[in-house]
Amino acid sequence: MSRGEEIPELHTLEHDLNNVWASLLGNVELLEIALPDDSPLNEYVQVMIEAIDTGEAITKKVRAIAHGEPIDLIPTPSPLQPATATDDAADAIPDTSDIELHCCVIDDDHRHLETMMGQLLDASSAADALQKMDALYTLSLHHFYREEQVSHLCPEYPFAANHHRTHCALLTRLSYLHATTQCHGLDKKVVVELADLLALHILGMDVGLKSYIASKPDLMGFVPALPPTSVLEAYFERPPSSP
Ligand SMILES: [Fe+2]
Ligand SMILES: [Fe+2]
Image 1: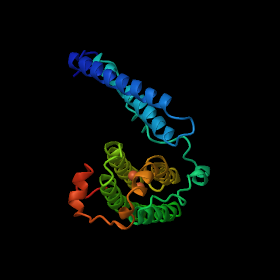
Image 2 (image 1 turned 90 degrees about the vertical axis):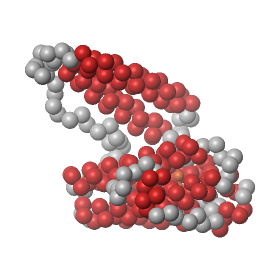
Image 3 (image 1 turned 135 degrees about the vertical axis):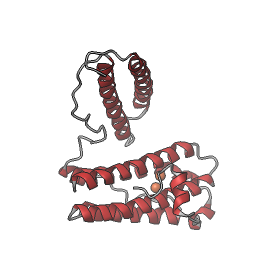
């Protein structure tokens, strides 16, 4: 390809991509309208809007290439760097310590996750943070599976599919932040973002399970068996040996 040469196939690709962003943005905006202003889920909506902005920026580069125009080769910034992720934001991570779902294994996992996040926030080096992220990833994999097995015993719970997709997205995000730390070293903002995402998930989505679990007293002591890691990775659509 020489500069100045039009590439018709890329025009089609650009058009298709723009349709994807328009559809996503329309639905995310509807979701934003439907959510109460004080919902913790608004954080996720903002992340999605930033991701769509980034997708549109990349699509403009596709359009430039389609027209044979030079493009800025500086990588498009990652959309998932929350503006709130500053040192001060560590103090603003929501407190999940009072959350009880009436299921011992889930509540124990949440306390354990909270402790591990605290230790990660205190990580002294990139190597230390990576080790703690590995442990956090494994616990998240186990916890998300256990939580979903409990939710499957509450057939009236209507958000099981969405909850599963959110768990998959959280694991993907954990892997991404692990890779970022591996490439660029320890960044407090990355760790704060992780802690924030997990806390918001517990407050925004897990809490919704509480009333369904409470109506089934047998679930208080239920402990789902864990399948092998390879099965868990496939279940959460993760490549083997993540992160
Ligand atoms: Fe949870
Ligand atoms: Fe969850």
